[in-house]
Image (cartoon, rainbow, N blue to C red):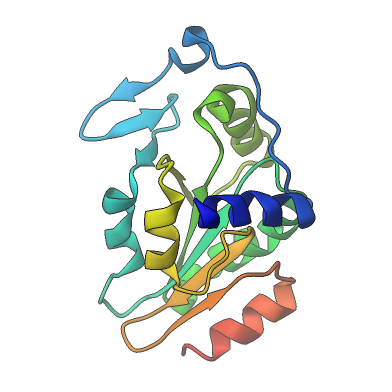
Length: 179
């Protein structure tokens, strides 16, 4: 309860206030069910935390950049082009960018899908649809207040969590520490 109140307070203080649209059955009518549930025809996976967790703990030779963001978070939107630029360099640098959307289900069709299409995001996008922040936030980082943007960068030898927005230069500098 306290962590939820803290999470909401930080969102308001950091400018990432929640703007919720009305959730109607027709808004989510384009959900598709295969191996996992996806948002719209883009095939964006929708995960509960236990399904997302393996993406946060891979033990191969890559560097993983996991960014937690939402379409309603201005600092998140501002830094997304830097993650996209880093993603474009991924094959030559052996890293992978995964954008974890924290948008609410009522926003998937009206905000998230149009945003991904308009911005032509090329990084892998997944949705975390797990309202139990009290349990999953400390599993990502025990000191994470729940504020976004937030980024986890890791490889099999090193793991670092950032509760901040990045510039391209800052992100590039941090990635050099993982090589």
